[in-house]
Amino acid sequence: MRVATWNVNSVKAHLDVVARWLSEAKPDVVCLQEIKCEDQNFPRAVFEELNYTAAVHGQKTYNGVAILSKFPLENVVRRLPGDNSDEQARYIQATVIDGKSNPTITSIYLPNGNPVNSDKYPYKLAWLDRLIAHARELMKLEEPLVLAGDYNVIPAAIDAKTPSQWVNDALFLTATRLRFQEQAALGLTDAFRALHPTTASQYTFFDYQAGAWQRGNGIRIDHMMLSPQAADKLISAQIAKHVRGWEKPSDHVPLVIEI
DNA sequence: ATGACATATGAGATATGA
Image 1 (cartoon, rainbow, N blue to C red):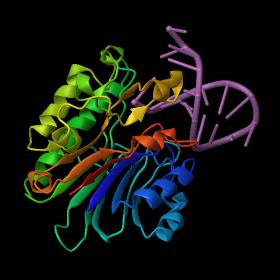
Image 2 (image 1 turned 90 degrees about the vertical axis):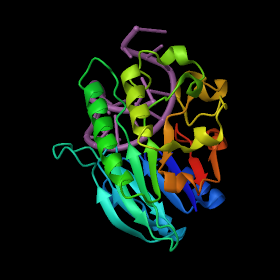
Image 3 (image 1 turned 135 degrees about the vertical axis):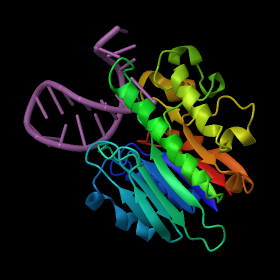
């Protein structure tokens, strides 16, 4: 099974690019973030035409996540447990019924957290704590689990072209990275880094500004975290970098694993 | 340095992003 995660920065604004990549790469499951539309406006018909069913947790203007799948989706969970007052649509989880391992797959859109001296940073840290708590529960099932999404976390200096640019940023602050490490310490494997332990210059985000793409000035912030039962099946992990060079792209590119 | 760029809303300017 090939599973992708992609922050599309508005599914409607970038629908052509999204459909083009689906037609080219033909992933079985795609976790989308920042769809920026309500459920009823999700372009479901376009994806059905490409043989995908969709589970959607949308929101107007901001955030919004979805899972596209060529296999049936069951046990859909919307919202990350742990704070009923959190109205932001940043989490959806489903069981993918492929008739074999039936993995649980999530689409996560972790808060950015900037500026760090605002209430946005504590919200990010609290959200990470909730994610860790939920991941701890899911790990107890001892089943194939793929925690995929836009984590808005640069795990280490190797994951940025110019780390010095990020030292005081919510994506790279020590408290952020410590929580990412805490999540990994539950026994989760960073799929891309596990298969490419020393690879730099492979990034999933390139800012629209200052010619970041042309300069190769990117960061690796989209991740697939695998339970042992999923990591055992891991065959490949690739960043579809070329998509960033297409006309009217998202600022993120897809990350694809085969399990 | 709050800017560059881009998106959504809504019809101008503002909030958000990373």
